[in-house]
Image (tube, rainbow, N blue to C red; front, top):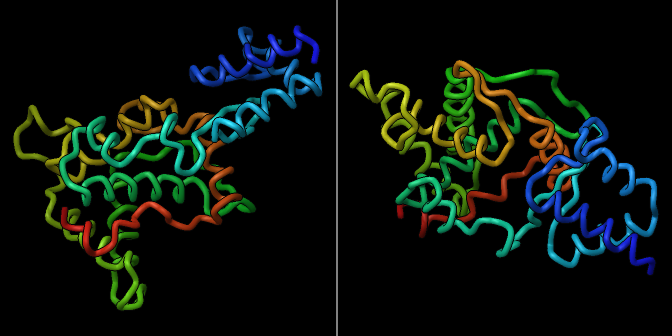
Length: 238
């Protein structure tokens, strides 16, 4: 193994793990992008390293990104960790966040073969989308009576249905919080913004290339199935 190639591979890994976009169009990382695809040994070292660490490589628009693989306890979030990060208390609140993220995926992508061309989603549009999808998925004819996800979806829908659209006080109307539908969506998108997946401008949320890379990978890998709400009836009300 050429030591220079090892150093370059580690430099690429370091950029990826710290959240940088390794991209052909980036002045700072163009050389790394070209080394990744132009040197087979560098490519092999990086991909083997990511595989060993349980990380997945995603590509979009001449850029590469990484995401934690399923069940990755080091680079991903556990449910309890995500609840702490977002200030949530109950499992059904976390499941609602998961569902909002899933709805955002479906808003921009239906599947890997028919990507949509929407540039952004408005706050009110996302609220309407969540309401519509929760209504459909929690109806009695969607799940078998023994399906462990049925009660989880129903608990999430009950939580959503009991939330006001906005909080009553003017100072709280547009605040990210657990107290309203608007607040929950903003809480969710604030988190996605921190993860560099969306950019907000005037209550419009614009997906980044990182989001699009992860979304395409998700649909190709899981075919759009929800794997998030697996707490079942026992955990749904916690």
